[in-house]
Image 1: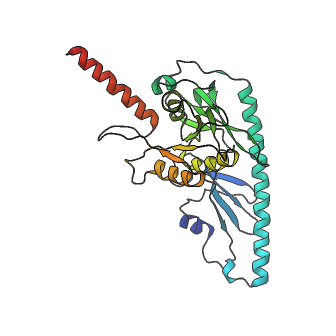
Image 2: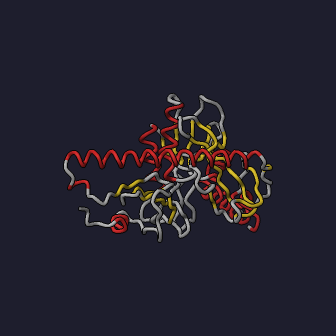
Image 3: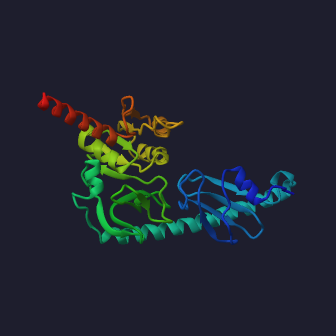
Length: 310
């Protein structure tokens, strides 16, 4: 028998178990190392006490079985493995159906939105253009006055389609539609033809800045976050095997681990890409190409002001 309980096994993987679970139902709860209320972790418990749990965003999955597979004989192992594979298949079918429902919801919302105003506070603060973003007064019932960015990706079958939406409110808070697919999602901020270099970055404002000021002869693709860079780079490399690729990394230099750079390196390895990294001076704020550009603008303004006063 497996003397480790489900809750103990989840704790070993870094997860706090949700307060309640219902066999056969997918329960969402807080993922490790994420803000409270993120609900990007999930668990499905089965009637026999087994469970699958993981993280919506990263695609991470863990399997637990109360019998302890290492103590079963060959026949029992095969039966237990078959049962767990069947549960995985049922879970994946349910998940695919959910993703399709949310993709349909995203398409229905997108169809009725209006263009984003040029003076939207987020655009003004970041000093960028809208690049096809639309506007929604209230998103999911709580975010107000949002830019809406379409999220494209692969659903079942491998075809690229609209899979989700990302909302950005005036303060910069970002949220996708709950329950929709987001892993591997991307948005072509600027597509300049099939035979030009392709630049992949994390956030929308970073991509807009690159397209407007630094990569005017390349296509720019926003992958939304660091963990998506690898999946998006693989997908695009398969579709455009002859193109030159660049990964415009975030420079999370002040963190213990420079996540932006490390994820960019992995994406570069799988796609044969070059890395573009913004460099910051000692004491200078910022992590991405939008921060870099605004720092440069501020430096130029300060220099001009000094010249005038002199």
